[in-house]
Length: 335
Image 1 (cartoon, rainbow, N blue to C red):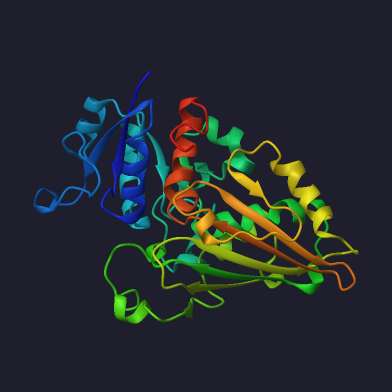
Image 2: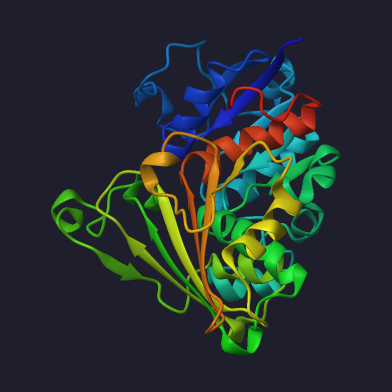
């Protein structure tokens, strides 16, 4: 069976990767939805020679009988489009931060904007399949996680649940991302001359993705310090997470905890004790790679978690969620 699927925002980096990956998916046909007034004057996406573009209107969505629509759009656009897309019969996987934070107060605090769709904010399912797979299956609105939180929640949540982290000693996440994480819209900070031969931190102590980590891994803000940094490369995220264990533990002890959580997960790869992932291992894949180093004598532990910010951190994870919504094998189009 083939399902008609729509993509809004297909010209952005995450949207382009959706197009790239879905063009090889055996059970979907792709429709490119134009939502901008100047859309007819804009070029087609690179690397895709697919069906004609259709307008992003309720009539067009109903006529195409779209089963799922991906929104690779800014939060305010997602808030505008989601209500009528749902009314038109499509399910929505939103790649923006519009529906991730559960309350309008939390959204206002971290995004510095008012939320326009409180009812849908409460309805949305947080689409990190490794933790919320069953909720995603029955959802009509899935909020795709942010790229940084995907890597850190996969690394932290099993350890927090197991109670092995000394939370009084604090948890520190040093996170580095390629420039595509900032989106395709031109800016001085992400221009070639600013980024090349350079390395910089940004949004220190106020990065909006922190809220997703606190919610998903059930941490208090004072327990978790996060710093995002910009690498002079196009894609990939590598996060180095530092903490102390409650008792003397080896890397193998921690890996055994991960094995209980991820032993049957198709997109989480665990490294042998002392082995650490790098960016080349995960670029253009939907994997999250995790490695651990421990010093039992001082109870210090370091976990390195790596993903491709545009795949497992965006388009690939969105397709995982789509597969679950449609009752398909979760790995379809991704392995």
